[in-house]
Length: 395
Image (cartoon, rainbow, N blue to C red; front, top):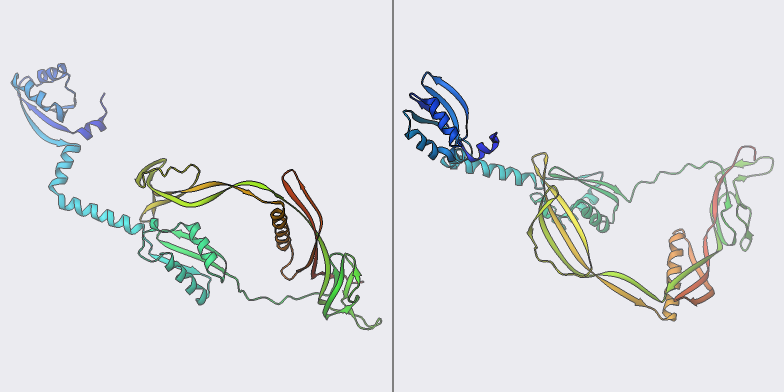
């Protein structure tokens, strides 16, 4: 049996046959291979049936040899529907324009909301958004993606500790955590200050408590520096010892630098291709030419289209192809020695507290073997070595 959906797309007509011998007409049509369906009797000498639009000429030839008369009741399917739409072209054009307007408006920015930010920070964020072109009335798929917006705001607005960016429908929401938060005063319980590592005392400032060491003393890890017990032996009072005890500490750093190394860098050349995606199928709309880069990296961004509050299975996709180049870097032994020293110092600075200071450095050992320069460096660091230790009742 033929697919009724196919009949709808190609079109069919409802035919009424009147006269004697309507059954013979049906048999003749079947013998000629003409497909008829939904045959119904409409009277003693009348039949109603459906026939494909393309079979109408054959129907007319067959009817000429019979005593029947046929009339076409009505046509159905794609061709007739299109004809009716063309007769009402104004309504059709208006409907298409309406859906296009709703579609475009559903993919524009109609709201920008900044949450949990003071007025100064919110002004700075909105000013930066204006620079990025994120304004009310802009088409969403012509703007940066959410991750890029978040990164740019974090880099360019100094007052931010963190910002979350979320696109809900046609509105951007920005959740802000600012750097300058009011600090709650810490309520300290009775405590001592002890050494957190072996050191030589170079300076000290005791705000509260009883100092147990002096400058130039050598102390070991866990040694009592400032006691939280003050007063006479028969009338001791426990307080929260506070102070800064600067000690001279030492760090070993081992670092290797190859004399020859290979790595890839971006050349700055890039090509962007634009696609309309339907599921896993992507149709190119711009940037068809292959840039011909020998080495490259792809960065794909997918922005789904929306219709009102619904996300459509259609997306606007951009694919950025960035050219890369292999670089061979070679150092002389002297250059490698200098670079290793710089790397070792940088690695140590990342580990140290912000208030620590590298005072001196001494190279203990240098080797140049297997195409690598290896340094063992000893650093002298001045840092606060005091650590809090609660006073337990009965101490």
